[in-house]
Amino acid sequence: MDIIKEVRKRIEQEADEKYQKFSSALLPGINNLAGVRLPVLRKIAREIYKSDWKTYLRNTDCRFMEETMLKGMVIGLIQDEPSNILQQVRTFIPQINSWSVCDSFCCGLKFVNQNKELVWDFLQKYLNSQKEFEIRFAVVVILNYYIEKDYIDKVLDILGNIRTNDYYAQMAVAWAVSICYVKFETKTYKFLKNSKLDKIIFNKSIQKIIESNRISKETKAKLKLMKND
Image (cartoon, rainbow, N blue to C red; front, side, top):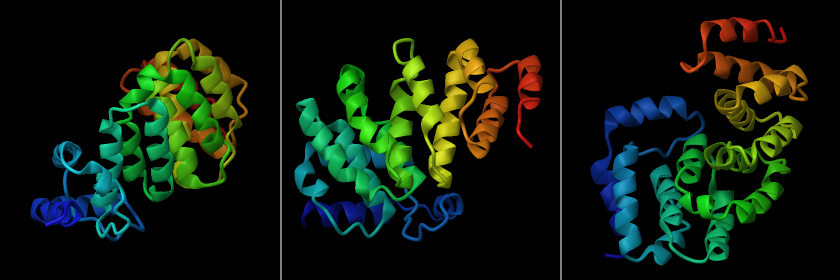
């Protein structure tokens, strides 16, 4: 049995009907979810990587969303020259069709930690894209790896200039702004006071910051007054 058929059979075996129903409710428009939990998928991804991972990444017939997710997870495991990994990333990005595939992919790209400048340059094309999940991909990579002292000013500048009407891209920007606020409150508060964010993203950013358990009640009250009704 080849690895693609083998993995598909494994997905069918590991599918959890209750989890499938729960997850499907969070993924409108996705109708090919088997219902395999993330820890199980990550285990399968490691097994694929130890096997014939190059063949698996060439799979163009992903019957289940989890098969696409696994491809993204396998890319995150690759040990190779950064330029070669980025080529795999570039090939995978057009296959992202949900926030779940996007976010599970981005959080696994640990090679970014050792290649910040290279990946930052790589992301710029996608930050300026008109495609929902290309923007979300770039923003989620940023919120995972770039909200730190050396990049915070660049990050806020970029987030302030993103213009999109696509929901999942907007939510990614708001999520990123909320993490900036938690880690760099003074800078991000000033950014919000002089915000270039559009109204929807601005209000969602405030909402996400307020939802954080790491923000004081006093700060939450101050931020509520900033919302654009």
